Image (cartoon, rainbow, N blue to C red; front, side, top):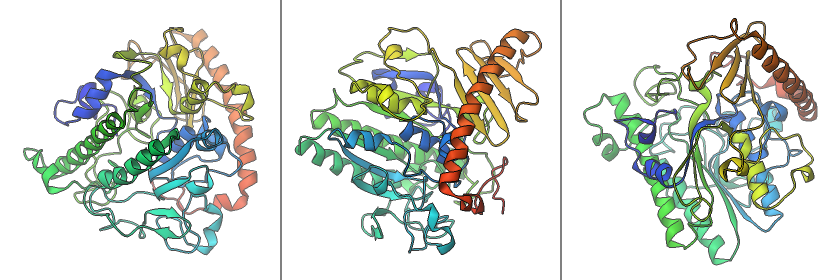
Length: 448
C-alpha cells in the first residue's frame, strides 16, 4: 500500500474514510517507514524491533523467523497478555506435511517451518503468503494456500467474499474473549490487501465504476480493507476499551510495480500510488519504504497530532515495552528500533537515532531531514534533504561532503553490527537457507 493510497495523504479518488478518521483522531506520522521495501523482512522487524538482515530475512520468501529471536508476542505473553495473529504471516511455512503456498509441505524445505503458534502467538488464523483479496480460496496464483489455526489445522468455513472481512471475523472474537476473560491482548492483524492477486467484490467495484477495471479492483479492495478498520474501531468502542488500546496502522512496503496485464495474477491490477515520492516496492527510495503510519490511543493522545520526525516499524517493540515499563537493557538482543514515547509525548522534538536500511544491492541511512542512498552497495552515494526535497530530485553529495562523510561512517558502523548478526542467524539456520528457489533478485524476479 502506497503512502499516497489514503485520503488523508491527498488521494482524491480512493476512499478511505475510516483511515482518514483515524489520522484526524490520533497521531499521524508523515514520515513513517517500513524497515524494508518488501514484505517478509518488514514483518520480521515489527515483531522483533530489529533490522530484518539481523534475522537472516533479507527478501520476500527468504529465510524464516528463527526460534532464537525474541518476539513481541513472547514478551507480552510472559506478562499475561493473550496473543493472536490474523492474516498473512510470511515469516516461515505453516506445514511440513501439506502442500501449501510458496514453500510449505515440500520435504526438501522442512527447515522453513516457522509458524506463528511457535513464535509467541496463542491464537492464529494465518496463511503463509498471499491469497486473492476476494474469495481468498479461489483462483490462487501459486500452490493452494490455506488458513491455519495450528499444526495441520486448516479452516474450511466462512472463507467467501472480502478477505479483509474474513480476517476481521476471526480477530474480533479473539478480542471479545480476551476482554471477557479480563486479559490484556496483542492482536496482530496483517491484511493481504492490496497484495496481488488484487480482486474486489462487485459492490466495491461499482463504487469506482467510472474507473478502468484495474483501478476498480485496486480501489475497491483498499476501500473494503478500510471498512474493516472502521469495524475494528467500532468494536473496541462497544467493548469499552477504545481509550486504553494502542491501535497502529501501516503498510509493509510501498506500492508494487504497475503492469503485468489485466486479471488477478501477480503484477496485474497494481494501481497504488506514492504521492510524489520516488520509487516503488523493492526500492529504498522514499516511494518504496515511506508508508502510511497512524497511532490511535485516545486515553494518552486525545487530540490530533502530526509527527514529522521519522519513525519505523522496528520501533513497535521498544515502544510497547517502554509503555509497560520494561527496561530495554533486559532484552538480550541488539535492537534497531527506539522507544517513540519521548517523541509522542512531546518531550523530545526529533528522533535522536538514525535509521539504517539494506536491501539487495541498495543501502540507505536516514538522519533527521537527511537521507543517504546508494544503489551499488556503497560504491557511489547520493544525499538528499527530505524536508526540502522529499521527491529525492536534488543530489547534495557534491555540495555537502562533510555531512555525506559523517552519515556514510555512521551507516558503515551500523551495517557492520547488522552483518555480524546476519551471519550468526544464517549459521544457526544452516546452509540450507541458501537453497530456497524462491529468493528474489533486485528486480523482484525469482532466481533459481
